[in-house]
Length: 368
Image (cartoon, rainbow, N blue to C red; front, side):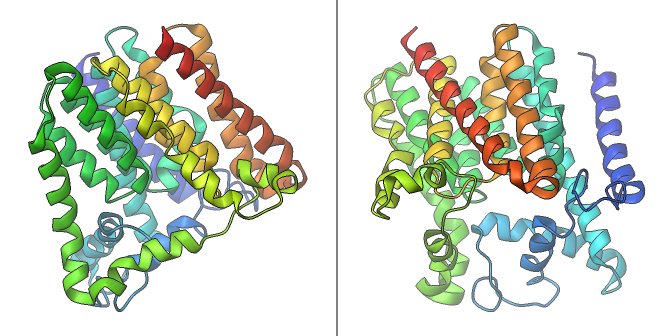
């Protein structure tokens, strides 16, 4: 694809965000959040980033349930708008600035996916499907997604330390990316028959560098704030655990499901991961299993797995499945969640079946 076409894509994406925030603010005069989710997570991000204009210490003086890099991210629109307008800006300007940043990360993700695919590079544009676009604009999950894709690209260039550096940055935005770290290590070990201690040092030191300010300013209590919040979080109606709750009965299954979320880690450590294709396979398996057994499921998690499904797509059946998963996710949220809550249970069952099928097919790919 020529650079001019990438430029056109970039302009189109920015224009789309501007149009949606100016002309579609009311979501077609509907209570269903078809396009914008201003009173949802975007409002939470605005609140969690207020530590910057208020000149307060994150975690110690203001609450945040997110990792350090995510909490700093939420302050970036505040910082930019404060520089331009002082205190004279509103939530709408924050939301627009935030969405523009996220859509630029979506664009970067598409570019790297395009470069990572050896054939049918146009499949990278499946990142423009409705659910992917929606959650890229209204959530921040595209940041860890972009970092994960970039780290895979660096791995393909044999830039191992840089790969785990950006992976560590991703973990500091969304913890699920810790699942990829042992896969990266095993990839190096399978190829060179030795452990790359430098990768471990870089990964750990990057994490320490970002949590150290929190530790120094607020101590261990401040450091544990987001972890305590997430561990205390209950289940929601969209998780597999909720679907099986009446059968399982005991809350002791919480612990079992939590362990199962990480069940791919020991399996990947005893497997031979000697190609980039196997890195992608094990990454997708690890993320899908994590999503399946999570006690609290969020629809934007489709962004976590979509790039890996795109990298693995080899035929029309794979493409149709990606499109189906995306459209089912958009139907599930916001359409059914907001407008037809009585249909939430059936659509969650469909979503769960798709994830189970994707896991089964990844295992088949691994055997092949």
